[in-house]
Image (tube, rainbow, N blue to C red; front, top):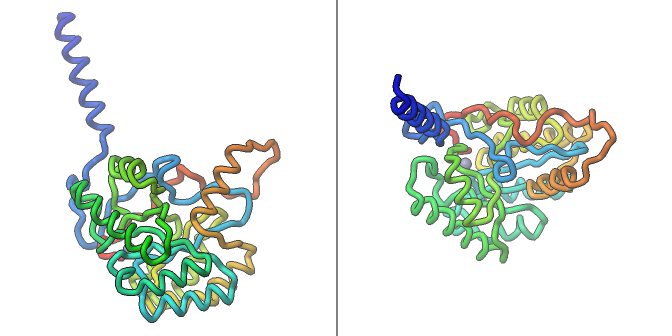
Length: 276
Ligand SMILES: [Zn+2]
């Protein structure tokens, strides 16, 4: 083989390798009812869970606010002195800004979950930008503060989107490592059992404050998580703990921390019909 051909072959192999590393587009594997793309983490930008020294976890509630269920949940959280994070839908914020304002006033974190819950991984940048901007504005109007986190509906987002969204909005992209599949409405006992089984220090627990069974599951779920020694913080607080931890590398062993770190596996793909 001539040197020229070798050179050409090398170039072809390199470009194909580069092509393989590019983010697979969601179109490659059509998202149909019953499946969704897994979403890999991006260190420092996207989190499924967080590496922390201590029994800290973040409870997250998506797709609200709900006119009836979110106030009930806020009462429960207040009774337990628990701070949670709400990934809200812009449309719902516009409809019930007073509920979002109450949640923020009571110390909960309000974060962006898009305007109308579309599959961001399949949309143009401009459409994604509108979804996030409108919701960002609605949250600012309701609470006086802009959010710093977003969660893509269905966990569907490309690596490229994660980067530009992070650059443009300053958002961290928040996924989850505990999923009780509460949107399938399996009943409060199952929701509770799944959360209790999977939650580790640093976990980000996904559920939805738009399903009655989820709200019903929460009092005993909170009781039992507390009994196990878990402490509840917002997602931003959890991330800050990880940052503080990595900027102070300590020599003491941290065997009490379970291997549930940034860089851990993606969340189990969940059906596209999931209102995550
Ligand atoms: Zn959702």
